[in-house]
Length: 169
Image 1: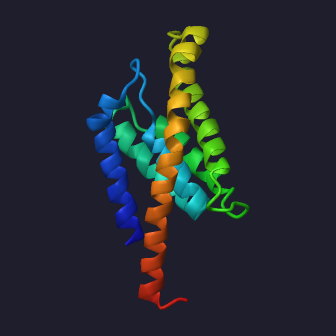
Image 2: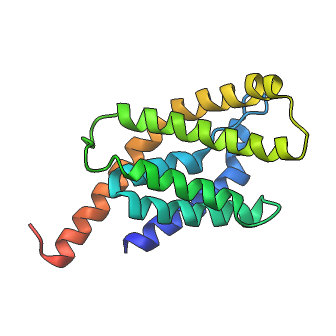
């Protein structure tokens, strides 16, 4: 059940990122909801599930938006794995760790994208940093607190359902 709910959530977020969330753009900058979901579930469920969610989100992103399959898959899987390592030393109701993990994950994703442009010789680092990376970073980490609360509630419902079906106290 957990796999199907998280899979449906990823599909909904992915579809909404391509359609409805385009209306949330501020100055041609939109938040990266996939990073928010990956970081949230990685922190709540651990590095194994975080990397699997990152893998699925990366495939979705690469299939629809990418030029090839692999670059976003690798970055999202790595983000899920690294953020999931904080699962054991993390108080779930604390919102500082999700905020910081989203900050560094979004920065890592942006630098990885910039590196791809840099390899093609099509990047002005200062312009890219000031006009795209910083505004997207601010927008993503601001919304990450709301998204983390929603994923926290979804995860609690999933765990309660699993406890009831397995008769675990």
